Each structure stands twice: as structure tokens, then as C-alpha cells.
Amino acid sequence: MVRVTVAKNEPLDKALKRLKKICDNEGVLGRIRHTAYYEKPSDERRKAEKRRMKSIKTAERAKGLRR
Image 1 (cartoon, helix red, strand yellow):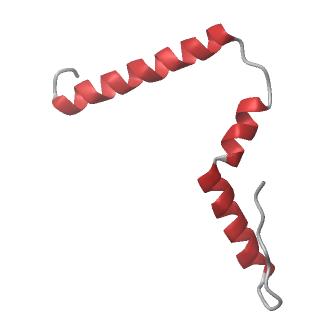
Image 2 (cartoon, rainbow, N blue to C red):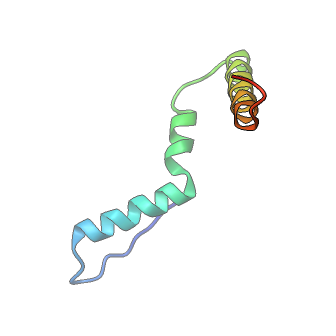
Image 3 (cartoon, rainbow, N blue to C red):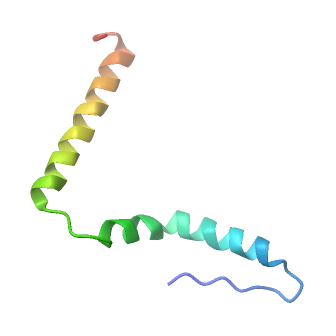
């Protein structure tokens, strides 16, 4: 659970910005998006394979092996 204490004279905007930064570092939004709906295991594997192939192609382009 993420908590942010707000000082007496602290602006709310500053506290909200600190909260967003903490949530981002903790990965809270990523977990929420991941659990927001059920994804079939086959779809997860398909997406993982697509990400892996994209990273391989990017690495090959960087080395100049593929255009």
C-alpha cells in the first residue's frame, strides 16, 4: 500500500506529484493493468514472442546485419 503524508503548509499538487512518482516506481499501475482483465495463456505467449522477435530485429538493425 502506498502512503504519502502531507505537511500542513504543503500544496496538494506537490503531494500528488510525489504520490504519482512513488506509484510509478512501485509499478502499481502496471499491476492494475495486468489484473484488470483475464488474458488467455496462449495470448500471453503470442505477445511475448512478438516482443522477443521485435527486440531481435532491432538488435540486428543496430549491428547492421539486416535492413
